[in-house]
Length: 245
Image (cartoon, rainbow, N blue to C red):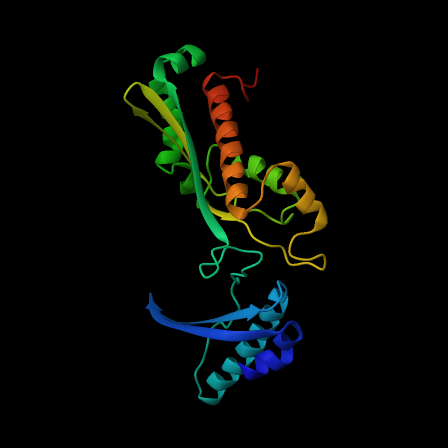
């Protein structure tokens, strides 16, 4: 770890503060997983962590070679950078949900068909039918709604793959239809960049929107996603979208 810090991390006042090891057997293979945790005084340095991990990998490879331990593959996996990706240690990834209620009779009048036909559409997501393709796919449009807010707020205008994962559900409670959306891992926090922890343009955009914290950003994102998905599902069931006619 000293070589990692001296070679790559010190320039941003970074340090390695923990190392996890995991050894397991899987279908005849023996796997050793090594995870390095670094922290910095500034919100910068995630790239240096990747390079430092590369140095550690080479060091471990040399140890294996000297001990005559053959390794089929030695590779650096994806990092969990606290400033750009969800991290279990700094709570960057947030869970947020939103739901709404509407009387079943009112909604049936709106869509012009029994409520069971609407629930059948949502059932595709509940049973994970689309996930059988090997990808966490869903029927909704969160993949477009969610990035739109990120771009509008100038909040980390980077890939939003993890933040776009969502769960849409609908159920009957009494005489009401409950429609909701869950976003299990919204990426919020600070971008790492030369302009500071929050770029000036992002600060002004968030101020105009009345968003003053990561919690409020998540709440706004959930509300927008809920409204968009409910409207999208309603139009689908009414056969107003993508009909080919």
